[in-house]
Length: 202
Length: 288
Image (cartoon, rainbow over all chains, first blue to last red; front, side, top):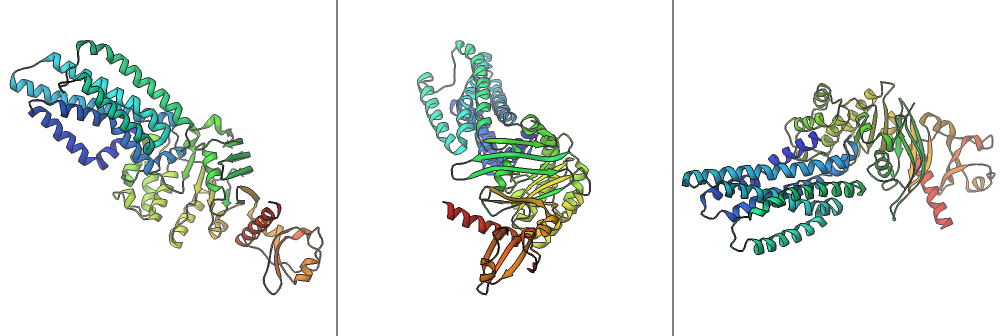
């Protein structure tokens, strides 16, 4: 599986230079803006959907067909994408948290509760979104899966408008209880995606 | 031990059917899978590799049933697909690093030797390579992890004669080891004639023939007869295919079924395949 992950990391740094640079810029901007909510939500969603783009590239390059020639199972391939997805969200979370911590330190307003809430937000949204999208992607392919991707993003935005009416990223304390549920959902989604992809002819 | 044993392998895609297929590739041999585009060569290879689910039959790779040994057995198999499938953004060096993590017996030195021998640039991304270079790189990957069996789907398709010759040389080198076997699909029969021990003809999903290449010339031959002489041939003569040349009839026949006294000339693989495929088409039209 390490070879699959290495391949995805190469892909990210070779084909994704511009989006990665944009994400780095947005991270810096999130530390400079009085209300960084938009940047934070954008970075979280962007990190969560990176594996969708990687999967599209794999299909375009016919890497999915070439897997049949390698000593790698489809299940391993699926879990590699889930791992890359979790890593991408984690990296985005660490960068945003670092930027926000720096901002708070400069303003001398260090708020550990707010930072914890931000980490929970990344964990919940960053795992739930791909957990809902990936099974469609692995079952239908990236083209048709994109429709599910759009529907889920629209639903997530509508939900955010209801749950975060003032547009700021501040989760209630009870949100901590949802964190383990998001992790379980992500794992269950991985098992479902692996089963769906094993049945799909590539 | 047989490198590959296929029994009653079947697949139905709706618009294409692979009819029960039996093939045996003995260890140390090269088998050419010949057929026109859409004959079922790539389908057969995908079924062997488990990339498509078979509807029936069995596949045994290096002595073990494929359902038990895949995907791990692919450490022993080197594959080149018609569409290479290698990530377009990676260069040869990066591909080597990725494959080192994927194959348990990846040999960096062998990969370096092959990429140098084939004059493959180390830093050019895959998508910037010519079609021939892409095929060569895919072959270098397939031959750098100690594979005992190579499965090559149209490896010479679209290559210039020089590149085809280089690939042929590489395959001949590979098969000097008596434990190494190759299944190679192609519709360029001149390439196969140089390297194959066995030839299998596939046509519209049916296996028309599977025979040792050297025996084919002993079994089949070409006769040139007048229309009257051809019509007068006894029913016992096995005609693999025939065509009216305008001056008479040219037919590919089984030598052992011909009456004595008829001159027979040698048949080449291309001629045999074309005649057999055309005869099969006539049969299909007749019985449909």
